[in-house]
Image (cartoon, rainbow, N blue to C red; front, side, top):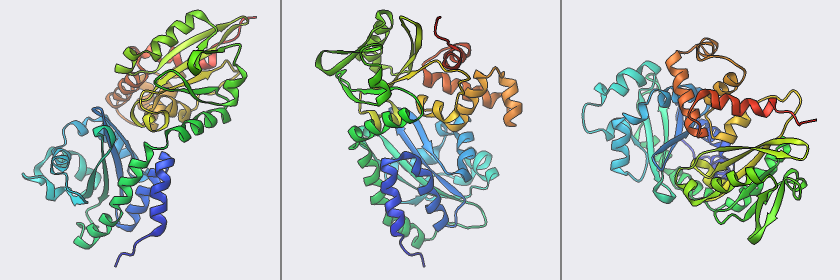
Length: 363
């Protein structure tokens, strides 16, 4: 008989504060359910975002890269039914579940035979789908096991709701975290006022960044400031994208200022309509870290790795060989990271990322 896990409840609420903890939460559910993994999907403004533990992360990457999320009748029926608890997907789909292409061509070849999932309604009409996946040998979920999962569903729902109530605190945490890895950063609210800054940003106040009316900030470089105004404008918020703005000073190039809008999970940190300003400065022998790109541009782990390889000069073909995957899969990742960074061409992305390591101050 399954016993309730008090520590699991604590972990769920910790994930509300630290999103990286969700993979550990999913792992705990998986262990209790004798499952092989699971996932947390969030659908926001027509976009799909997810997290998964190591055991199923590659499968979820293939799922999104292959576009299965856009042709998944079982997910559509799960959302339409809006059952207030966990339910097996085979019990949701009205037709012949075993003949669905996603089942025969994707799930079964990867030893995913049984899934228990629940839909949680979030803020701004967003949806979260939390699921646990089992292989063939584990068998289907019993009513008792579904009841055990349902016990934790209210905690999952509250955790997602709590995320949107901690924006101010997490804004400070975000800028402080960037400061620890040497990146000046500030969070700008929808009304252009400064919500939070770190010490590295403050040190550049009066030279690179200048205070403005109503608690705002402007750039000392007039040309760059025009681009920043565009990035913070209401028009820009209707089509949010990352903007990279080269900054010049009296001694030459200061760095590249990245204006990252509050989209997807970033809304929970920056606030709705907020923007993160992160200044990448010239450094000798600068190393482009995948985790930094992942956080900065909201990339998946695979997209971040592909981005680093592109910046190093690898071709799509090179990356496919290195990652032991297909060229079409790599191209799908490149297309996704271009969309997330707001750039149209692969060469533009490479120049933008590589410039962080390549730019040198004028002498």
